[in-house]
Length: 308
Image (cartoon, rainbow, N blue to C red; front, top):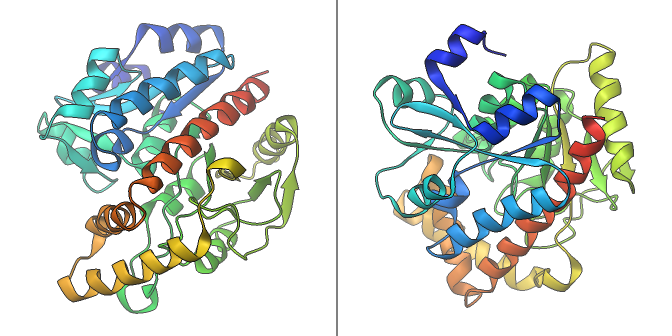
């Protein structure tokens, strides 16, 4: 956590979030890459505002994170969220980009990695996202592994997601998390969710049916001096889950095209998701919205227990 002096220098905390911090109220951090790069307009704006509303309705305070004109923002106004949803001058900002964007007064959307980093700078203990980044297919040759995993391993935070996108190597992602001691808890499931679908074929060690179990596990981990995060896999609601065969076929075709076009690094995921969107006639976007809103609901409920 940053010192008060450094927070005053680099960070702007919204009045709502500051009030929650002062009173030790439950807070849910939210990323902004899903707003600026993850969805088209106006669905990106509508979803961001909807997630904040759902967090409030479930008894917590939303803290959407971003960098605007070089200032790290913890909690955005509706106008600032609209800016993130409509501006073309926003950098998709991972850890390596973070100091450059801040130092040069630029605008940055926080990925899962930098949302974890931002939350940790001010002491927020829970983050909601759509899907966690992970080990990419073919990583044994490309070394393409999302920074999300290291930030999760290095910071005391609970991250609620709908699992890992099936464009990733989910098995290797779980192995990586195990190596760095990150518990992966299935909320109502004993299998790692795969973002658009509820099942991936990869079993989890811990299934938990109540949010208080999840909060208790995280608290115990930290009280024992076992630093690092906890990942919660919250499956997409059944009614919104997509057909696994259709999704997997779309992904396989997109992976081939990405290889042919030489698309690598942080451009890979947006490219693949765009191809999946087109292959599913827009249904993947609808599923994405439902799962993010569901994560916001569950995340707020966990936060209430975590801050109690």
